[in-house]
Length: 270
Image (cartoon, rainbow, N blue to C red):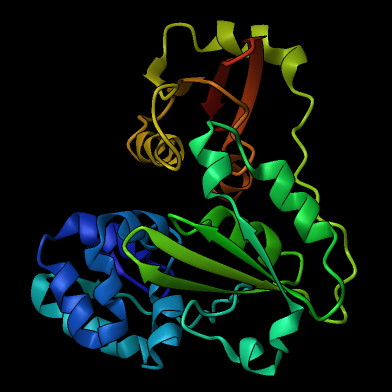
């Protein structure tokens, strides 16, 4: 497999079973990849360039370590722009007064079967300049990191325990934008897309899965989706955090709200 600075860690791990321990040997920070949940959340979004920044090492260190496994480094002089602060960096926490940290524990909300998205967005939009939102959860909200990172928020993920994660989001004094993740009005074209792919659908049902597993299953299905096929998803709600991920991966979608707790979704390549 040919690799470069843009190659995602997930692709490397999928290619060779020994790559996990080789990457961990580069820096102890990567030991978190042994956790299957964190591996799913982080590896798919993290490129070699981003990982080298996290570890404070060179991209060439990855190339040299992976070469004995059959990975071939490509000539790539492109410098990747990283919009998100390193997951290992928490400089902004050192500068913030503890009184400026706003706590939001979403575990009871999730346990009650409710999507905490609107509660989180209200808390984010109510932050004052210089404040930090600390979201307490059982898993790392990587899609939220992506969404807020593009809006100029800095973030830090602290895996306190196996089932306890603190996600910090810092609103810099120069960030005044209200954050909205909007669902496109795509219901009109549902019938056209459903007709176009009626013989070329891969179907999955994520309605009975607990968060964040629905998103994981959808993204995993998209990774192996054959060319020319569409993914038909049965969901119990509109997966708002998934939508920015689909845009990043150049997928489009159509939604069909059948009723409460019953959402149909078609995801396809334009």
